[in-house]
Image (cartoon, helix red, strand yellow):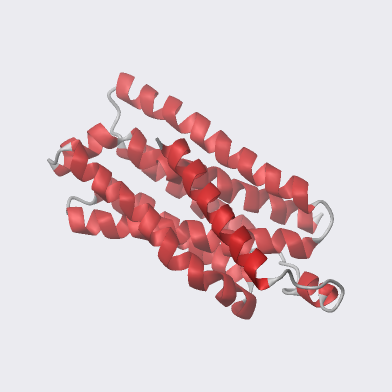
Length: 222
């Protein structure tokens, strides 16, 4: 039962993550007017998300193994909360770019803490990963409808950011009442059972998967 409740909170984070991925592109015109800049400058700010992800992915996975998954799930939620609230209010382009980088770090932190948590829970890891993507897609589906409704009703665009931040606050309370599984259980269980792939094959797989990850994400954002 406790694992079920923890899973729901982790899935809800990825619903918000789906919103975070496209909320800037969905509000480009409103942000451009608020910042008094052309859309090209808004696009420049959006690119900060990718920079943040690249910077964080190389270090957060190892740190998650050392300090635990819960720390990095909470870090991702805190970074996203700061991003949503800050981006709704900020007027300085440089600060907005820093917030976009923070959103990319939030993405990496959630990945470092969440995927490993599901692995250490055991059981249906594959279905858990599919559900994470489903919740992301739900956020990406609902946000454009919400933004379009706000525009039609002449409601301040920032409420879409504030709503996402409010959901994060509620989910943070629910998440931190739950017990995470012991870290590195799957790694310890598998030690010595299977051989590591050859080094050149690992690099080939790494490059191939990285290329696929880049192109699939770029196409989705485009």
